Image (cartoon, rainbow, N blue to C red; front, side):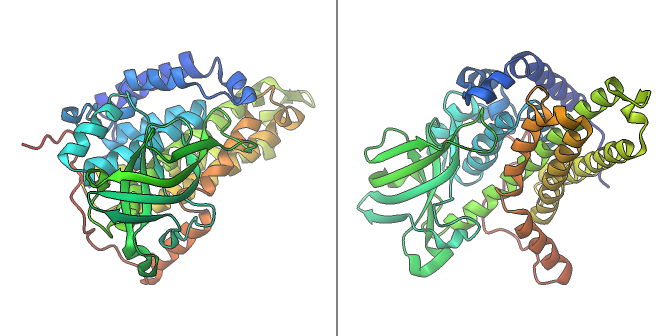
Length: 400
């Protein structure tokens, strides 16, 4: 039986991150967004508060939170601005939780501990200029020479790409083997031959960094290989289950922000002698926002409940991500419609919500991909089998 009641710890986390967002993000976000400024000092404060190690066990420098708390953290951060949830997705969901599951003890000591403490920023590098959803067709190559691997290629659309310290990066040892040739590596900024740059001209998430990575004969020690040769695709897919969860919970927060702004404006704005909230079609949009928020939140909590018990949750996480991100886009569109001409102006935050919402229906699997995934489950073409990977410790688990 699924129990979705919040624990006292869940409530404290929710209150703490909301207070942080109201004090540290909301007063400045319009300026950061307009100036395309990445607020690295605020990111560091997130690390100091334990956010960047939220679900990582305490023995590895984390806070040992459960997945409901992680979800609430992402929801409240994106309620303020998407850029701050993105950090949770790539630093925590895609990178740190993957190292917790797949990394050696040496890798956890060298990379996971400083990441969980917020001393180093980390990200995930799979997408390439010609490779997105078709992740088995990577162009970035690796070849082994003794106790090192030589990496060549390029990555694109990498969140935190031009500011992160550690990169969980995927390359192929043999392109003919497709997904069976892919291997995962930890690449460190400063390695000779590794460079990065920032992508400019994005539609949204302007307070976050999105970058390109370039690898020219980059020598990576064999000790930085994550998993075995050829396990990279499985590692990437297990990481994406974590990343999709953070995107889904964040999308619930963005939809909530749209509803909050719309409720406020619906009471303030008067037409034909009444608040616009009295008009039936405005009520319809507001009701639709609220309905989707409740449904999306429950789908996210269902996935979190499974994660807390170490159970496979690929289907449930995909469903939550698909539903919540689509609903966030629709909520932003409705919020602008409710605000009328003011919604088209950055005087109100809803235009930023719309710009930010669009990315999440593309990354971590497009809405079209998730449509196919869910259809395949229903038709019986797809089923979850046990992953051939180490079990991920349940929150609070302390090995030894």
